[in-house]
Amino acid sequence: MYKGTELYFCSVVRDLAAGGLLKGTIANLFSLRPGLEATTADASNPLVVFFRPSAIALAQDGKNSGNEAMVFHEALHGITNLTDSQLETDLLGHPTNTSDEIDKYN
Image (tube, rainbow, N blue to C red):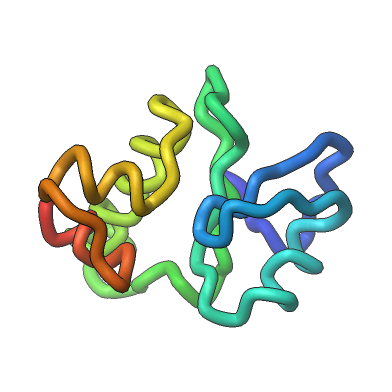
């Protein structure tokens, strides 16, 4: 896991929430997408995820179901290379308006 606001990513990182592409810093991506909590490099092995520091819940020293769900959610992107909408269709049978439904499914 990486503290996304402090890293530069030399390659292309997919903003899975928007389905678009962006080159530059992860901090720039987070500034352009205020609601984005994490982003995952395309089909990465090992898994490469960038988290907005403020999105990480500090309850129970960070060992909580919210953080676990977020890591699992991003791992699904990294393993499958699917968007939120595609994951929702596979897991729930239909897309929803928010990727939080994937976290609830976990």
